Length: 213
Image (cartoon, rainbow, N blue to C red; front, top):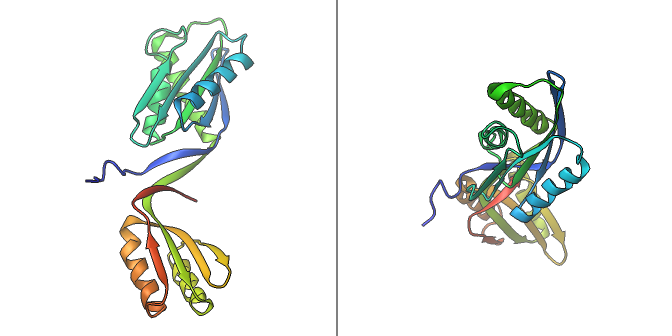
């Protein structure tokens, strides 16, 4: 039986970004990316390691799965708990899933101490996310509606009132596909049924995640 926790909303990185901070002449450069699998996250990390091969540290964290089933992080030579864990905390506090952050450090010659490192890696990861495009993943349903040309205008009007956009395929009949939040499913189906006098064919998927634009 599904639960609210199993379908809790979360966020994804729609477009990765990079951000940089400086602390006592040490440079901290963060890069973010979407990673739907652990293999994708590890490939991104390796790419940054090769690119910034001359850096002192390439620390990282990633979260895979809508329920955060896989969590990994690395301090990459920094004192334990001062780099990877703070980066992971930034991901989790932002509600992100299927995401990876790599923070590269070029040492500036001055030791920052454990507290200083935690703050610097946290700020760098936040700067990377601030430069990224983040989207909400919502619990809902995919709805397919097949209607005649008389009904399509009414349906699109109803969807527009709710801020829902639909893909339309015009052939002998019109097929509309769109997503609705779970809590709006019954109301939307009822409105379409009423607007088309029951002539529209409506199919509703099982609950799933979809990206809210």
